[in-house]
Length: 89
Image (tube, rainbow, N blue to C red; front, side, top):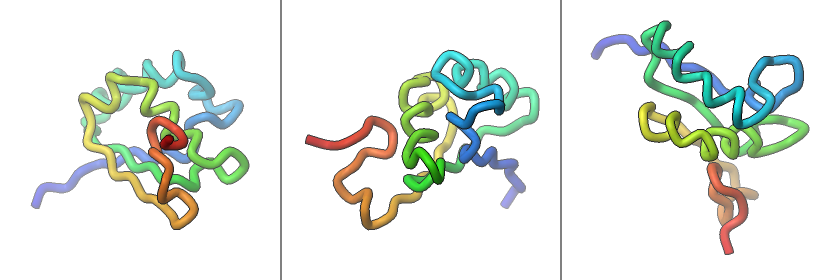
């Protein structure tokens, strides 16, 4: 199996990271492609002070979801929650 570089997304949505909002996250694919990265890692508990924020930003940045493999993890409190879109009705 070939090695893959995975970009961890816990910093998405954090201030002072350069990826605080949807517009800045939309620029992420260009940077990741230069690094030969096509896999993202996210979880319901990213960010600690704003859970699920990184997943929400990924979900709103359609280019990321469509062009990258995303490893998403959930926790028990997120069972009725879409990591990319928010609470399910």
